[in-house]
Image (cartoon, rainbow, N blue to C red; front, side):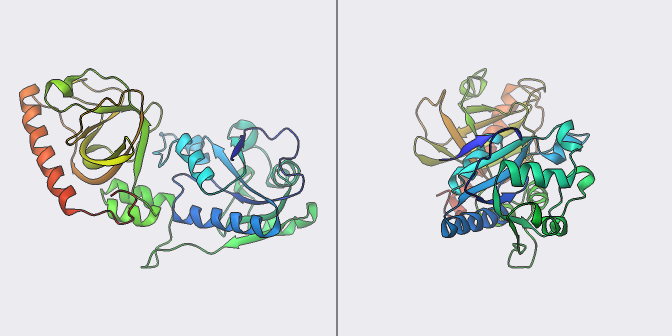
Length: 318
């Protein structure tokens, strides 16, 4: 079972030693999955704890003047670590104190003292510490500070040689290329959450929706989409809107609203997962609810056609 810790201070999390991965791990794409699988494999072989160090907020988010478009929520990230078989996760608060910590102190205080690392697995471009001065070479040079060995995972690529990275996933999603995004992620792009009550305008228009509030999360996609929704133990075809609902709400907080085709049930309070298959159009403001309803009819028809002709690449969405 995954155990999550937030602070550098405290006793060693793996007194008998751990095999450790370090990274931001936004989206847990195929490269991340390969890294965590190697950690799990080596930990099992050596009889050590499988562990990881990550950060929330993400370092890029901390330094960016604009909100970072996240591939996964914190909850989804934690579920990914658990599914990968990680036992101990140090999810560090990326704040001013951590920003000024030297790379050398990070090795001593986090990797050696707090984690008890025996093997450290990173990508070859991994950087850490104040002003990003830490790298693979520094980790290797400091191996005398603790009984650890450094292992570098080769870059994970697509068939065309493209290196898998979170920035490339975001680029594919921004372009509406969900097939490419799925190839990079190793699964369809999804957003999950608990269904909350809305204003029931969709119900009045003949399109009742399951609504998810995104809160502080900034989505990498926006608009109207053909989707498949995991609810009640199965995947349902549907159509979804992700945005600020300009016709109904006049802007403001973004919501994810999904209408499940041929579904008759109450999803309030339940967790659902929305898998994005194809983008239909951008969000727009209509003159009245009648015009909105007519467009919703066209969107639903288009989504049904796309979903009837589209088969999931990975099988995660049937």
